[in-house]
Length: 146
Length: 114
Image 1 (cartoon, each protein chain N blue to C red):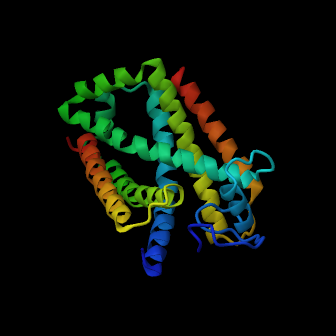
Image 2: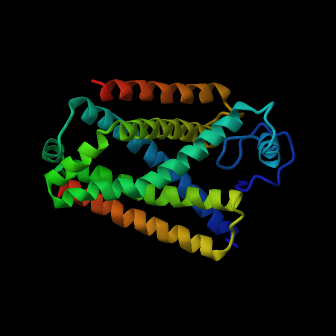
Image 3: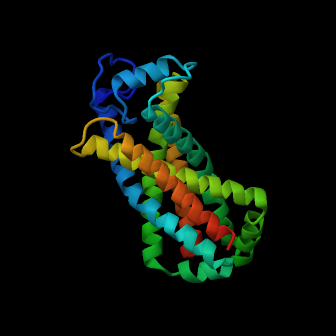
């Protein structure tokens, strides 16, 4: 386990830590934040997983507080649902659902790498995760514009 | 500085909670799409959730998994990006976990019991 990811120096195909990235990839990515070329798909998977996680962590307490408005009765919930029907809120909801599905897919990839028999970064799974996000986004968009 | 044993426990807690969340989030996404497609009103939603032991149990477990998973993830981000590594970080994460647990269960109570 290497949660900080700053000690490894070998080009190791075994995934480490929470990122499902090799030591070499992770060091290169985090040690050179200004670098814009040659980034591995696993770096993008790491960025998406982290940014989506932060967004969801910020949203979660608000979501719970919004649901608790129903303690004031169904009309209070309807008031919240009307607020949620405004276009900017709808767009934000859609983005959060996509981020949730991307975080789910990325997390499942990491679990499979860490606990499954596979080795390496599983780039195909990164593409699959992006596909899951796109599919959920499409289905949810259809549900919103029903 | 957190001991290696505690680090290991947090690592496993993060992964085990992630396994629970993988199932919960998949189900939750399906519920979101279903409720959105049906255009449910507040009364419609509450008619389905109030008194449902299965719904309450599922979402109560969901909240526990969130209360474990989210603070540990934020702790890792704070350590790596903010270089925040002292005991105050652990206290802040524990407090956030407690807040998520309390307001999460309160939301589940509101929707299933009221």
